[in-house]
Image 1 (cartoon, rainbow, N blue to C red):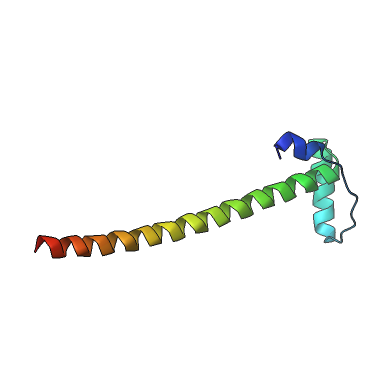
Image 2: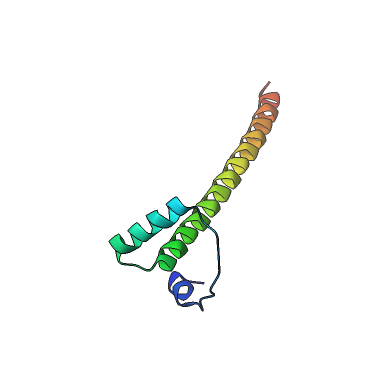
Length: 84
């Protein structure tokens, strides 16, 4: 799904309980940005989702790098045995 499709997807109304301070900050941001509170919440959730994905990718790449290093060290040890 493209970003445009996500923004044009049907909306569903939900009820959530939030800290009063967050609600005041959300209201202030809504007025400042001239955007509805629901749009700001949606943007925040999209940003959170993106960061979650980035963290998962980072962990995956780190695991792959560790595995690649282990494989390289094994092949290096084998190579030294051949050279001896």
